[in-house]
Length: 220
DNA sequence: CGCCAGGGCCATA
DNA sequence: TATGGCCATGGC
Image (cartoon, rainbow, N blue to C red; front, side, top):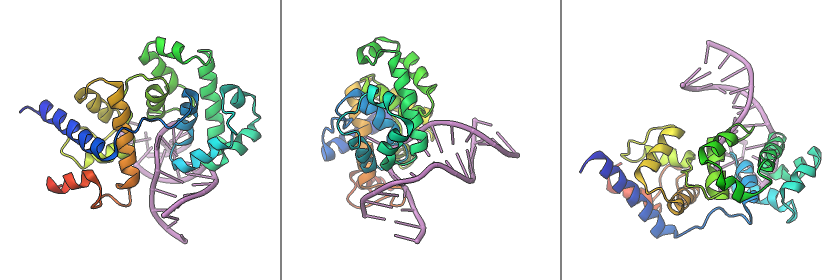
C-alpha cells in the first residue's frame, strides 16, 4: 500500500469513526447564509455560546440591511457578548459591503469562480483563511475544506503527513478526500464538535474521545 | 482565580 | 516568513 492510499484510508477511517459517534451534524447552525457569514466573523477565537448571545441580540432581524444601517455604537452594543467588538463591528460592515457587490445574492456568488470569490474574501478586513473557507463552504455551499486549530491539532496526533500550517493541512484533506461538499461540510463539523467535547488545548486526550481510543490503539 | 474559545491584524526582526 | 502582543466576553 503506497503512502497516498494509506493517507486516504486513514482520513476515511477517522471520518467514519467520528460519524458513527456524532452522526450527521448538518452544519452550519444558522438560519440563513448571511447569518453564517456573521457567525463566522463573531466566532473568531470566541466560544460559540457567546456568538449565539450576540446573534440573539439582533432580535431576529439579522440582515445585511440591519448591519449596514446600524450605527457603530449600536452595532457594538449588539455584538458585545461575542468579544473583540471594536474590531468585529468593522469586520461585519466590511464583509457585508463585499456581499453587497453581489446584491446580497447567494446564487450570484455561487456563479462566480470560487478562487476569485476566495481571493475577494481574503482581501476583506477581518477575513482570514479559516473565515473565508467557512463562508465559502457553509454559506455558499462551495466545496473547500475548512481548517481550524482542532484540525491542525488532530493531524499532529496521527501519523499523517499533513503538515502543520493552514495551507498544508487544507491541501492534504482536499487531496485525500472525495471533492464532495457534503463530506467537507460534515468532516469539519465533526472535528470541531469532537474538539469542543474532548480534545481541548488544556486536555489533549481523554478516555471517552472516540479518536483517542484510536490513538491509544495505535500507540500514539 | 486562570484558562481558553470554531482568528486575524499589526509591529518587529 | 515567522513569531509575539493585542483584542474582550463569558463558561468552566
